[in-house]
Length: 124
Image (tube, rainbow, N blue to C red; front, side, top):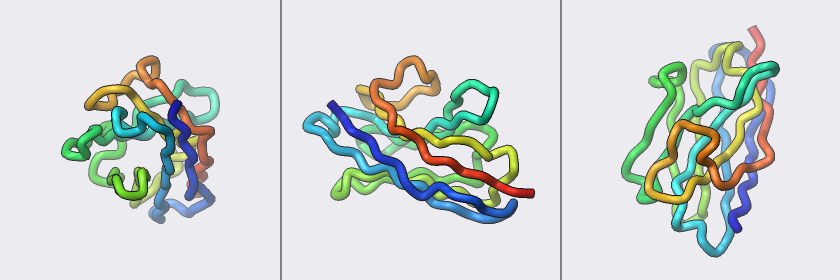
């Protein structure tokens, strides 16, 4: 079992920044790639960003490239998502995700574990 706990969401004005954190625990955590998905009201959950199990490779959705940065701290078992230049369309519940293997794919159906989510609201 892997447990994921997100934090760092909140209300921010357009153009502002937030940093999300995902603290992971569990005996087999080291076998999982990590990342973030988000779900806006009335929409499907979508991939945002992922970091490989080794931490060497990152990936981003086109909509957030150049604005969001994912990073990890293996000593703390924590993954971060730095979000800059936020837009109202970034408003969503952001979910931390863990997928067995080296890479986190963009399909929500392959995710093995989810956090409970943290709400990000960007006002215009």
